[in-house]
Image (cartoon, rainbow, N blue to C red):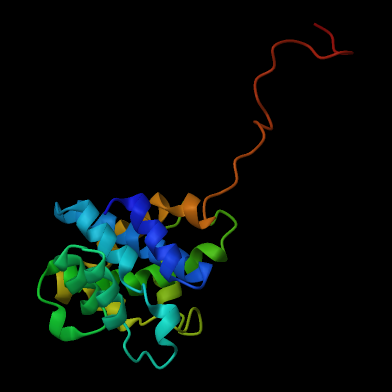
Length: 203
């Protein structure tokens, strides 16, 4: 399944645009992590894209979460490694390799990064590790984010926290335009070079 078909599949299954946006944000982080580890970008990206595919159907109690998504993906003939990664973000028993562990941390950090971008005038552009770490320590900010799944990253996948955040920021920035988290382009330069004197000015 190529990315265009995968995004269309997400839009078919998800009931809320906010869910689709979350899936794309985790996809961006997973692709960036795959690049850092020299892994398959598409495999990791699709795992991120599909990880919460059934979120809108399994409700707040989470009964059947990931399992319903896994059944849809298998029916669609999706690679079993991706299915395992989707199950892994919800069930520890499936966290059998680097990718299936990474998606847990990507899910958590994407939520923090999107929340951080939404309160910045520049949105995702120019986001710094230091500012994200401050938000990470503010428990009242984005309280739904599982901070432990971010801070435990080094023991799980071997990346120091600062590097993990830097890689994740780059991942979010790669999909920022799709999430309306990229700065709006200006109509033109405010103080561009002038070709010559304006009307009323001496030459």
